[in-house]
Image 1 (cartoon, rainbow, N blue to C red):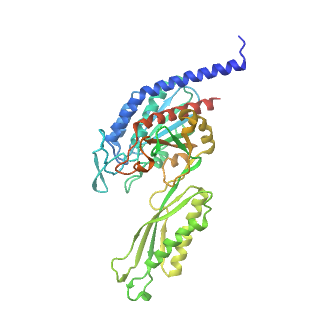
Image 2 (cartoon, rainbow, N blue to C red):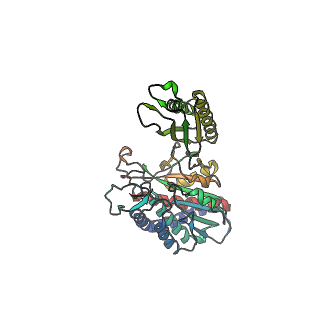
Image 3 (tube, rainbow, N blue to C red):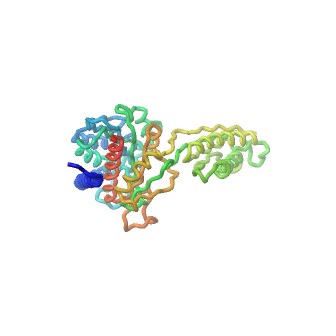
Length: 431
């Protein structure tokens, strides 16, 4: 039978429509489970590097699927590989697992009343950033893709990551350690996708940013040593407080006078100053602690150089000594969305959410350790709407607060996005 180009196009369109219908049916069926899983995680949160019961719950579910499971990655992480048995790319999907030391103030049937030990104190624990939804959505995606195994080409690696919020003092954790322990190897990952629910974006919408999406974070400490003296006789001192004041003001000029801010934003903030204990004593030492946020690699390198230059120069001009520790105790790279991958996936986002619901957004100066994966392989990190439509943006509680809330209805789109990005990337690689 002879087929025309139009006939082939119609056949492909019909085939695609049937495939989409099948996917939607599977996602509709899994949505109630996704909601139940989310409620469980929300009611029983655990702190960073302490996600032991969370990991057991995830593992128990994954054991019902045809996947290869590895536990104990970066202490409590869980990784599962779905192998189609056919050649193709390896696509990683990531969700974070940890809660925060925040007391929940929402009246929910699944409200958290959990407590845990943190820095030697008993603290309340809450999923105050949406990681409970991330785990539930990834579990739902794993179930849907497992049911579609015969349609896959390649492998899917599901990464459930601990300690995104940062490991406890004295410990290591999170994406950086998962990468060091080989989570992107065996099989070698080609691309990675992730998303973060957002309490200030309407459900049904998704936001994306090519290139620098979230900032690199580099904490720093400056210790200024002078010469102690009576406050009435300052000429006998080398005043570290005055020196510190000059440094605080001068550090602000790195951003305002040295960086080309029309290209990418940056922040240098001093968040803590300690020095002295009496009104009439000029102390011997002052300590400054702060953070640097940059969205561009060149800007990040410039700030590092300028910090050294200014700290050394101001201390020398005042007759003091200063020691800069940069980074202080941890450091995150820029969350960088690969431009080519972002452009490739944009039609998928438009088809899945509807073009009017896909929003090109400005970068933010918050940080995400998803960036450690993106240093190794091309990645795309999205913001998923979680705000109820009847709540205004100004009235929606912020992340990391006791009132933080996101709507269960937002998670279905998350499952759809992760599923469709996986399938579309596989099919494009196959061609």
